[in-house]
Image (cartoon, rainbow, N blue to C red; front, side, top):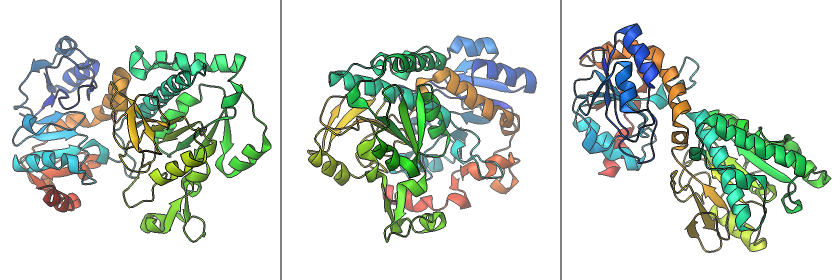
Length: 439
């Protein structure tokens, strides 16, 4: 039915509490645009069924009459409805093997799949995302993990008072805790064995910006990556200051022949490049990774590097890696698994390859939660819905029975259609080979 949209419950991940729209946003859609909304009943969602009902939505298990269904994360194959347009983060465009069964089922059911990740403006910039919130939660959780690790080592610091993000009632409360830790450091200082405290950041996007925004609530001084070793050699450190270094691509990678860095060549021939991060890691206490990584790119840090590091120094300075990108066995090879909010960290022991949940062990603590924004469900849902809202009146009235070429779709969404009525669109025809390999 036209002008009838659905909001599905998130049924794949037990810790997922976000929604694509808040009750207030649903109220606005109903009153301002005469859009009918069915919300699938759900007990674990941050927003209660009753809140949506008071906003004017219908609460139901059945979304089959909707013109389009909106969600957040992937959908279990048994929850899919035939001939239905869906909009969610499908995590399929790289040919991710763990989601090929879902994509195959959607094609069998003749569903239309629209992916938020592909919604971009005229400059190719993503418009609908949770990136800032992944950065916020990832940095708070990394500081929490650091505090727990140091306490296990017998080192008491202000980080020990910071909790995991989902233990705070709001993002503001989590920020207040970080600020309090910063005040303590500014007044009392850190133990000498942690000086200089340097945190390295990778990535240019919303994830890195969000994580640095939290870190900057502490007493921070920036070190330019090109002057990193001048700083190390100077010995001019303060126990009341944390230092941060932001690493750009030319800092992270270099031509194997020693020819420096050329962005265009790196994009076209990444195999000609190798990582430079191994030079920096021994001097970092924390490392926050937020890069977009492709399998053909060189790794930032390999298992062999960590094995060599721990052979030469059984207790290196590095305590925590916040791998917010969470590419399993990707840019950071010792991110050997993704974690969740209920069990967010593990220790990778480089000398044995052993993996131990928690923060105890002879290796760095790895944070690799793959749904970090779900730890800040209210603010993340609110801002996500705010970005999506302007497109809903047009999406709600599309006649999806028409051919792809005839869909009256917002311009920004046209390249975000992965399948239409069960067929891969020309832009994503390359996924056929991944589907074949998954069979």
